[in-house]
Image (cartoon, rainbow, N blue to C red):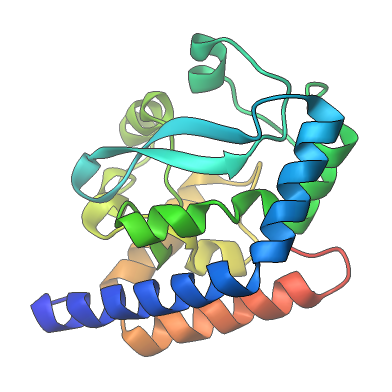
Length: 195
């Protein structure tokens, strides 16, 4: 998008993320308390991710796995039945509530509400070598949700398909498309079972 469109996208991000943080404050507090009571100290999980232009930033999530060393955390692909996940962590992931702290990433300008999901540097290097067009996903800010996610491509799904949807999103971007993706995400989260 051009400068005016990028500014409109950023304005939508700031307004919607601010409102979402305000409305979900009780949920954020409940999630933080649940993680603390179930899994001990260290409520937030911080991890280096790659965003727009290949720049790194620190992504925030509620912690869903038992702590791992830095190398394991950076290079191990976690899956739905990961044995390091507590029952509270499993519930947070299933409902996507573990992603709520990323609203702060959006306010800071690290991410957008809608865009390609950010990945760890190790996997960006691997996927960029393996999948044509993967690196092109970094032409726009990373997002909490995206076109790939509303088409069911999240978690342990095809990286090639995700990259294809991410690049399609970028190539056909409009503010209205962002609004539609946000609405589809909200409907998906409201359904029993969430995400």
